[in-house]
Length: 110
Picture (cartoon, one colour):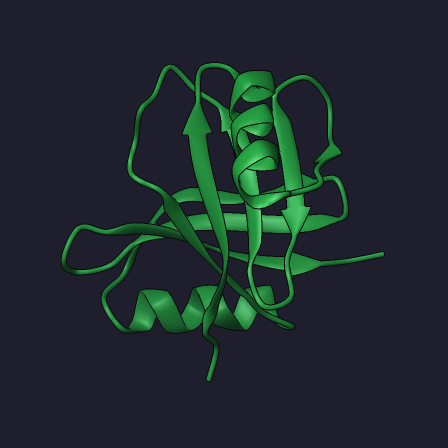
């Protein structure tokens, strides 16, 4: 079973949002350019992604076989809304479940 372990928050100002979460929860971020920053938690990673926002948070599921995960989602009636693409450290794709919720599946690769 895969449990969500990633939450992406959209923000029009990554620096201000980083400062907020650092002040409130003592988060320490890793910057991946001007448009994305991430914080690694014990059981949940949180990413900040630049956007005109606000948008609902985007939950992510980590997998060790991204092709198999995509095939299962399609077979179960899910819709792929963003094909697999690379990001620093891995690949991911976005899908929509039958209820209309958008989520993502990702894999880390070295």
